[in-house]
Image 1 (tube, rainbow, N blue to C red):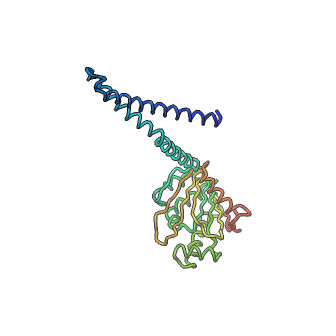
Image 2: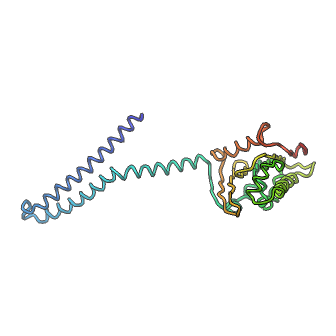
Image 3: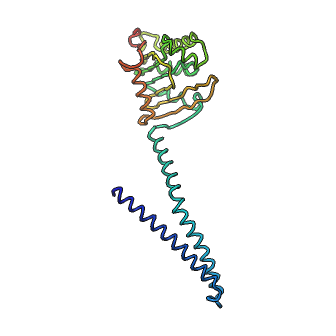
Length: 273
C-alpha cells in the first residue's frame, strides 16, 4: 500500500467518523425537539420521556465524538507517536541503565568478574582505582585479558592547566595524580614472567570532557561536572549494538590507533616504548 492509498484510507476513516458524529447530534436534536412538543405526544407521556432521555444521551455522545475527531484524536496520536519515537531512540542507543550514582548505582564487580577486554578513559580516577584495585589486579592476572588505558598527557601544559582549573587543584598536583594512575596500571603487570593479561597505556594531549569504561560488550559513560563541588553525575550503561556503545568504541579507536590522537607510552608485552 503506497502513501497515497494510506492517506486516502485515513481520510475516509476520519470522514466516516465525522458523519456518524454529526448524525448522532442531528438525531439528538430531532428527538429533543419532538419530546418538547407535548401536543404531538399527548397521551404518550412515557414515550415522550424516553425520547427526551435518549435525545440527551445521543447529544452528549455525538458532541464528545465530534470534539474527539476534531481536537482529541490528533493530540492523542501525536503523543503516542512522540513516546514511540523516544522509546525507539532509546532502544537504538542500547542504553540499559541510567543512574546518578556513579559508584553505587552500577554493579562494577559483576563486570570485573568476567571481563576479557577492559578499556578505560578518565582524567585519573583516583577513587575508582582505589575502590577496585583488587579487581584490576585480578583481571590483569588472568590469561588472555587486555587492559587498555587512556590518560591525559601530564606533559601537555594546556591539558594540565585545563584539568587543574576544572578540578580546582594546582597543576603540579594534577600531574602527580595522572602519574599515580600511570604507575598503578603499570604495576598490574610488574612480573616479567607473568602469564597474565596485557596492559597498555596511552597519553592524550587534551582534557577529557567525559569518562568511559568498556567491559567487553558493555559500555559505561559518565559526564564530568563543570562545578567545583562534588555532585551526582549522570552515568549511562549501554550494550553492544547500540549507538552509544558504538560511539564509545569509535572514540577509543580515534585515540589509540597508530595514527590516532593519543601516544602509546607503555605496553606490558614490551615493557618499554
